[in-house]
Image (cartoon, rainbow, N blue to C red; front, side, top):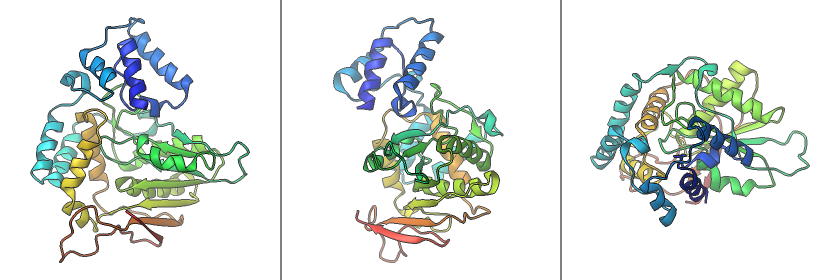
Length: 329
């Protein structure tokens, strides 16, 4: 697996590459350049791997490491306690408030993340003119990234190009646990839009997102139209819960929080948790515009957890015109 490969590279070099490094650098040339850059910063010295890295190599699973090595810290510990106390939503507010004290960027050019979309699946060699490129919009979770779309992308191998665009502020592709946070959502969307347009070229683009990533996919579509003069060919929204329709998120907050910890490839860093809080604040209220691109709303047919009898409709919702597809699960 990608994580096992990363563990082996870390063991051989003494580097501390993050678990997502293979997804962030999908070609051998790109990955080799990243490793070379990291080694050059250390004058090409191959350090003895840490004890926890040897344990990862032997067991194939991430082992506990010192706080300074993982980037995890106080906010992760507090977040775990908040999840156990059913205070998930309240702690997102804490993260959002604390994120205001992080360094910010106010223009796409000042973004410190590498936002080049990751190619997860390639279409046929003889691509038909006008064949749309599918672009997955990474969600806001602190443990998220392009790897969110790995399983889905396998269905498109040799059928359609499937890219995944990272979200600014999470340190993607930089080798650093911290990155500048966007000063506002439009700045983040402009940085993503530029990266998507470079990667897609003249091909039509279909944007796809899940949960918070679905909200971001629609916002990116609107930003592409309004600020960049490009209308996406379509938007696929999987289980979105926009502002005003978030009762299911509140009811299932404990399951969602526990899912974040269960899905860790390595402990969530405080920097990434603060980025999650920043985007939760960005998406917490109504947005000014709507995309004119056609929307497909994909909804789960079963609730994530128990649902109160007096509750309303738990299914994902979208206020704007759309086509609905209910899927099993």
